[in-house]
Image (tube, each protein chain N blue to C red):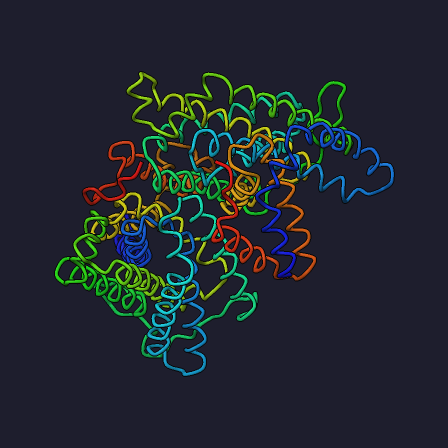
Length: 319
Length: 310
């Protein structure tokens, strides 16, 4: 383990830069496009599931990366939007409504609304307060869902039929995968445009020196709130896919530890790096698989690894 | 209205509030003085409960068990501060979040390894069982003990912070740590003490609640979020704020759970009220937090100058 750890440390700073430099994008995209049919038709469903999950988590981590990486807003409540997106599938499906367009519209609009309402309060604060308040609001949603017996309370809801779009059946594992892939590609493209657009530049400016940006005449609060809402809405889409993927929603999806895992993915991929969340989600899932293969008490190893990585300053090579 | 029930609920609210204060007082100081976001504070609460259960089972003395729990968590807090937290004070909040999250995973898994997944119950000594009659209401003797302990610690903390030399240093550190360090305060030792005292208070809270709820692995995570809310509402770094906010939130939470459905039934049909009441009472504490923050973004009693960091 020690040797592997040391190798990981040595490799780590080069991970996003080398593996996901410009030249690696095309091969990686080709791999993500072509591998699933191979996996599916050779009966490797487990790996297809892992890949689908990684891409869904990558969308969620990407939305958090928009907040943390571009906006410098460390949110510890992002799993709330995954929950909102997933329940946007689960609750209508509970009433027999399986219209995918409606689910997606609900996921995006409710996430955006929750982000707007909570963000308006959160963004009045900085630093420690901001982290704690985002955490508190996500827990509010968690406890609220736990207390509603009509929607399964702690046990959650089983989704018997996935969202259906005209001409698209998400029931098929490959169809779901390519939908997730398309969404991720779209969001990556949008994120890239955003980072280079005036909006992204203003955000970056607010992150580095809020007072100066305000002196230059930019309304930092409104830009950050817009970023917060956008991020929530994108994460809602990830929740929509996650609900469909797991065929099940429960409050556990928005437990605050999920939010911490998302932060981990963002950081390990390099906050602010465009493809960082994809790397982070993959590393997280692979680590979880590997460590849980070693021992049942893999959280112990994961926690120790996490602490060791941060204390050695290995997680923060890009900002 | 049933006044006896109301009285009992008020006592429950007081008990919850005082427990929250034990957790939040240390947390608030750690947040405020070190500017350190300690998510794993709930782990000390859990550790206190488990140590209390074990010592009570082995020695048979509950009093000894509570002391042992406080001592063990004091030591654990000092250890965590020395080995891990100390290296993170100068780093960003993001790193602190990740490390303390890792600490929670480790503590939970260790508790799982040592005490098993089932949790541990504590039998109360006979002297603490039974009820005391106060104004015609039978109040469980043990709940009264928790309340007395909580008030005693609150008074002790008040004395410590406002009257003692250590308290003076703590207040100095909370309002301007750079200046305190420049004036020759041994910041390293101060931080170690504050962290360990905070951990011991959390451990004490866990030990006190253990006979009522029994020690279990998730117990820290459940209560710590409410303790965060208490710290935010009270103002980071303020013990007085933590006390007021803890009592306020203890009462709101308890009374909300007890009376909200009756209140809603005045406006809503019965079935709707029974569905909405639990959800609303789960949200009530957070709504209070949002309201306080909308009016005072730094909490009710934020010390001047604390946490000024851009």
